[in-house]
Amino acid sequence: MGIFSFFKNKKTFFTAEEQALIVKAIQSSEKTTSGEIRIYVESKNPFMDAIDRASEIFLKLNMQNTKDRNAVLLYIAMNSHELALFADEGIYQQVGKEYWDNAVKNMLSEFSKDQIVGAIEQCIRQVGATLTEKFPYRGIDDKNELSDDIVFGK
Image (cartoon, rainbow, N blue to C red):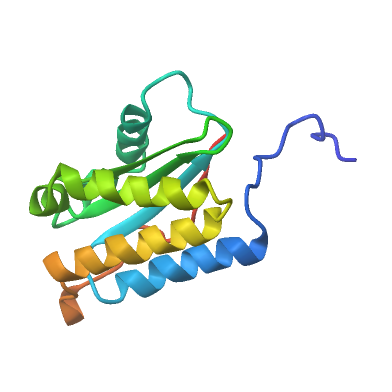
């Protein structure tokens, strides 16, 4: 072991293949929209409401800086069994609170069947379709403003 072996590695919640499927779903969804989707996964929520934690992460990842304010964060706390969707004002105002509540309910239903990766992919496709409808791809002046990689917390 190396000299720094006492440092803990960040926990991985998905296999490399599962991570690739999730990232591919993000990339596929973003091909038809100017919107952005990110996933943040951590072990447990540090003693706050899941939507408040998602808001905190959203700001920490500078997701509020997209041109059209159309970024969406899927926040998952695996051991706390919590999740939240946090959408920037541009897309949130287009579809309203009920849309986001229903998307979370759909994911929870799949999570309860231990279909976590499938539920994440389904959510990404649903959000991606909505982003496409409200913020279609703009062609040459459209760019990927945020990384498509999953962000892993502690």
